[in-house]
Amino acid sequence: MTGSYDGPEITSRPATIDDLPLLIRMEELSFGPERFTRRMLSRYIRNPNGSIVTEVIEYRGEPAGYAVFFTRRGGRTVSLHSICIIPELRNRGIARSYLGQALSRFRGHLSSAVLRVRVSNESALGFYRSLGFGIVGHQLRYYPDGEDALIMTLRL
Image 1 (cartoon, rainbow, N blue to C red):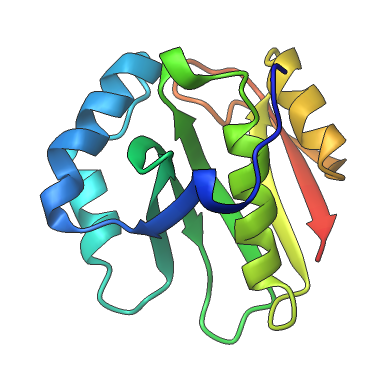
Image 2: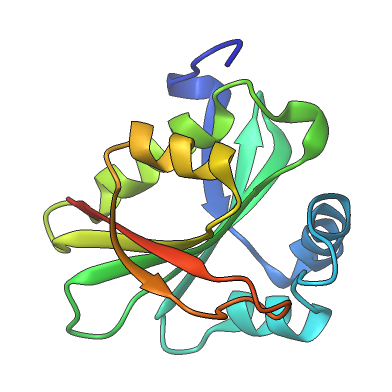
């Protein structure tokens, strides 16, 4: 990691339908055949019941990525469904700073965060461990290509 950013350099805002082309482009740059479709991203942004939080992550005032969280009404857990930082801005501490800010916002009214990560994604596993997430389970054939996922949680 070449830097750790806090404060005004890393901000976030709710995604709007006007951000859809930007989010689709970020998906294309970052994920292979498992990327979200236009329809999925549109549904996440328009989420009428508030159970999906979709945010644009900004670095120095410019879009750098996005994140999608799922919650349940009355639930105590938030699920990090996806986080994406565009390739040219990776390894600068942006995701770390953003997740620190986002998880802090959930503290107080939620008790834990959960996520799933590919068993083969060692860099993501190390990253989430460094944030305090621990492995609590294994989900067979979670990904479309049949790869397993590790389930990780963090007490908030």
